Image (cartoon, rainbow over all chains, first blue to last red; front, side, top):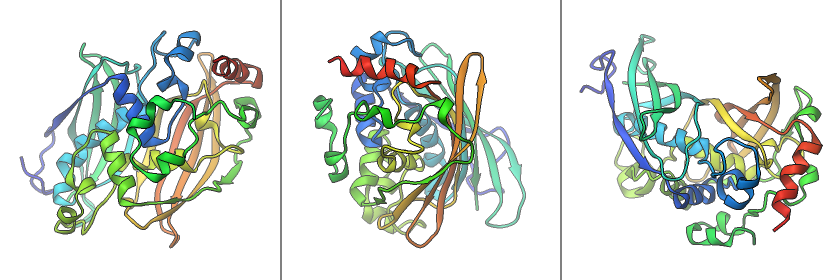
Length: 143
Length: 187
């Protein structure tokens, strides 16, 4: 798989990133991100609330998106590719116990000249049941 | 300190001193029906990026990429030094957001349906980041109250590093928010 702009082909599938989510993993992300919203870290509070995820805490959307971004950085950062845009929509809550697989596919190439050429990568995260939990898109400048 | 069981994940000085109890001073949160579009705020707290912050975030997202973790390795790459994971703005955003205007992101009962992020430069050691916020849209859809706002992350040289538009679903009224707060204060 080529990694220069000229070599990358439409339909190129980026290597997956797989992460096992547990309450410990969510707790560690809370500390790392300073996001102590109780919806993520307070099971007792969450059980009483009518919020997504039923009676369970839910993982931070930012954590899921971080996993999706790691698909891009694993692929592009070693050759100094630059992520300039990343967007995501969360479809389904990620719960403790989920195994999240993230991946991406190159869907567009934009020809703006050396140093500005970029590709669009459609990215996704899905759980162990094959259900999409998040989808998004990113732009990556490649040399 | 609330949530003391999280102490075992603390690795940085910022994490050690950060207040974890988002239920405190809850009346200072802004709820959906109080938000005025175009409202702007500059967070009082700044984020000085240290190597330990970049490494801690990398560990929190379970990404062992040496560009985020190994200064000596990173120096020898085209990046020329340690850079932060692209979602590092999350940590800066929460660290800088205190009580007061535009603090919706901390509100108990709020959750995150999506976002758009433009990344101009990666965060690096030595950046001192100021966070600016502005409410840009609010709407109701299928009974949920959405709020969209803009966050700008600007370093000490005036370089805009990241501009993003997070969307939140937030408690619509102060009475609704108090329901979430009360349940958290019962313990």
